[in-house]
Image 1 (cartoon, rainbow over the protein chains, first blue to last red):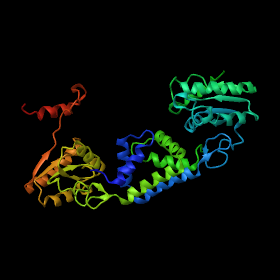
Image 2: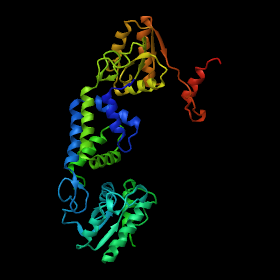
Image 3: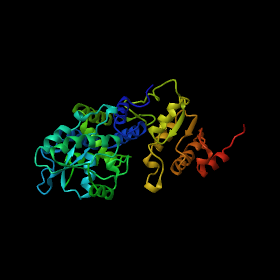
Image 4: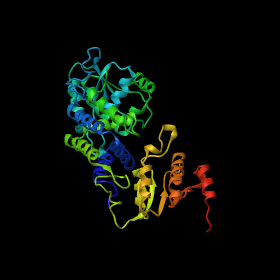
Length: 198
Length: 198
């Protein structure tokens, strides 16, 4: 016999399928949601579907935005000839929070990982090369300092350097194995300042 | 300037307001949701609002159910004269998973906590006393062994015992498989006080 209502079980299953939410948290969340006022639950559901429906990739850098060009790419104050390549939007957010970086970004949406079958074709690599055909002076590779991040940086540098563009890698002030989004702003800034040619 | 789209920010805010979800997890979840196929996001939103709309309290025990009587209360095989009192539906689920308990439940939906202003009137205590007017032989108090849980158990026992109903409290002690050196002093003291002949 099922203890919970079928509606509760379905909700627990959906929540437990989300990243970082185990079965216990899913139950806790499900009961929390069910105990909320009905209009609040409907608002959360609406915000979720609206975000999905309206958020798209920026035409230039492939970050998530609800306009054709993201605020960074649309900003004439930013240095559009310097592109920082990051794995995902959270990593971009981490660098953006330092307030020290004045260039633009390129979001790969992942890193090369043969282990789980992710190749350059699954990432926004071709799009980066196309951007580099324009007026680009420097490409800063700010992928994570994990095996996948390093592989991705090497792969991209081999495509970009022959185009005569300065290609740099953020310094290993970032601890090896560390995930950019969890690193403090000072370390991120130091890693940026200490970038070297590769 | 806001880095993320307003839609993303709204979604992150809603998710971060849920229990046990911090700002980082909320960002991670938001991007995960936005990267899901549209029909999947709509399904999650639907499951959420449907659960809220259809799940109600069982007429007898106040667990969450989508029928008037929950499966346990509707089961003639269960011993309806033994009521186990628990703080919430997750605690009920934990006992139900043991498969050893054959009685029914009563869900208080919280515990007495003067610190955060929760009194007996905020819990399903009156409803328990009303149930006890019927054919009830034993009330097992299975609230948590926290200050709030103990207070609640004491409070309820003072209401139920004078009605001539056997009122018991689940044993408190060293958990099975627990290593003595990692167990707190209060638990060790309780385990000693509650020792039984072997």
